[in-house]
Length: 342
Image (cartoon, rainbow, N blue to C red; front, top):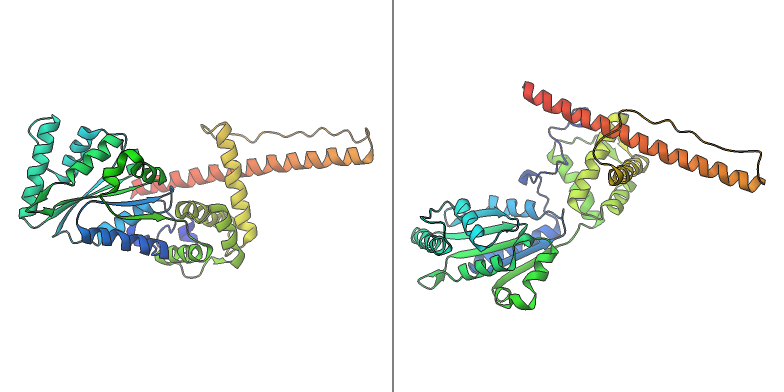
């Protein structure tokens, strides 16, 4: 698609959390510093929160990528609504320890033996729970109890909780006082300001082999920030669509007119999906305009004409969005078939 048109080596704004595209904004640097500080404490909980799309999973992957595996056995667990016993079974799968029976007592006993065995090897366990806002309170309490395990007075099991803002509200609620007292570090990820958002976009382009084409008009970044609010996932999604637009229109310079058209199309798609997200129409409906120019005063006739033109423009925008969406779907399918052919 557009990567070939702009001579890019890969897609710069993919939504998957690829550590090669990790941008160390001032916010993410501070978050990593807090996480590393928590690691040096070697006990308790580290809490990292942020609204969806602020880069929590990317942050975790970057952290894990650079940790010393000789000293740490790292388990990454994605959660849903799992109770204490299911959480123990997930940990068994994550860390690879065996258990003889399926009851909670045996699970706890086998986990404790596993932790002690690893401690004798000079390793401690780090469990990172992503999307931890989904954990029930009973499961959080179970994890708190497990962090009390020690070998010769040294803590050997630590937990990082990563999730959306409601996770912090849960942890800081009155009935979770004991867990709150076990927190050694907390950090909340904020959105990027406009200057760091610009650096973020250019960094990802350069990581994908960008050689200056397309160029960006300065005001483009203001429009992107206003629409995305500086949230990385939203930035990725919009910029991906913007480059696709540039490819379809054969643009070497992306200006505010281009980004505003893409934003309008995205908004139109949201409106269409809210009414019917199941299919893309196989045809473009005919639009008729009924105007009675001979009735009413001049102002009334002018108002009717302006209303009709506005309605027509809205319909055209929606049809343009549908057409571009159909093109995008077809191009994605072509990529899939090309990949299979290779």
